[in-house]
Image (cartoon, rainbow, N blue to C red):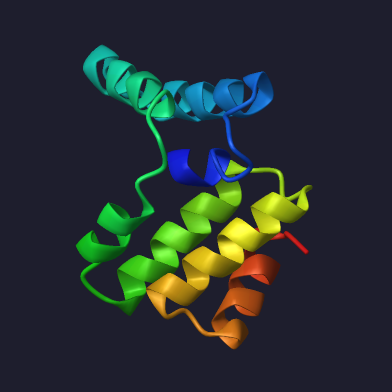
Length: 105
């Protein structure tokens, strides 16, 4: 989710607030919150994420979480998600399904 929010180069205030809000809704600990806030300041870590994905189900879940973390309103964000799907091996039919399921065009 953090990488998705960074897809256009930085996390803007609205994206940061949305991530913090989601953490609060889900009752994360202060330590987890600090970790996320620190991670927002670091460069994107796509390679590490792709290497850590154990299977297609996890890839689809991470793609969906990334999709939900951003407002898909810039070309950079669209390209970033296309790249992520390709790197995960999530085919275009699955991507279309996930977009419909989340309500994102």
